[in-house]
Figure 1 (cartoon, rainbow, N blue to C red):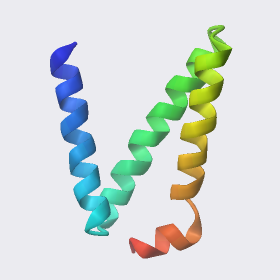
Figure 2 (cartoon, one colour):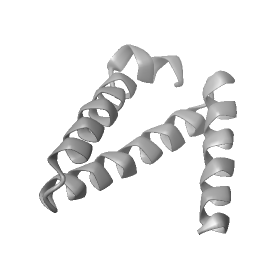
Figure 3 (cartoon, rainbow, N blue to C red):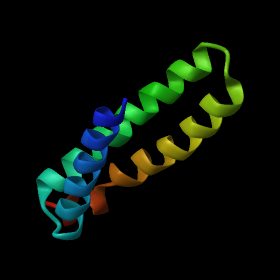
Figure 4 (cartoon, rainbow, N blue to C red):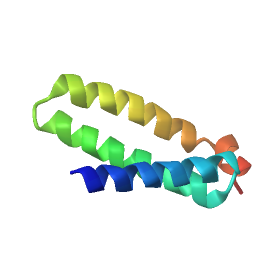
Length: 77
C-alpha cells in the first residue's frame, strides 16, 4: 500500500505545481483527481456507508463544482 500512497502524493504535488503556475494540465490533473475521489465516495455511499460516503461526496463534489466553474476554467486557458 505504501508505494501506491507515494504515487498518489507525487501526483498531487505535480497537480499543485501545475495549479499554482496556472497551467491547463494542472487544472486537468486536479479535476481528474477530485473526480476519482467523487466516484470513490459515491461507491462508499452505495455500499452502505452513508456517513463517510455522504460527507466525502459533499466535500469532493463541492470542490469539483468549484473547479468546473467557467471563471476558474478560463484562468487556466
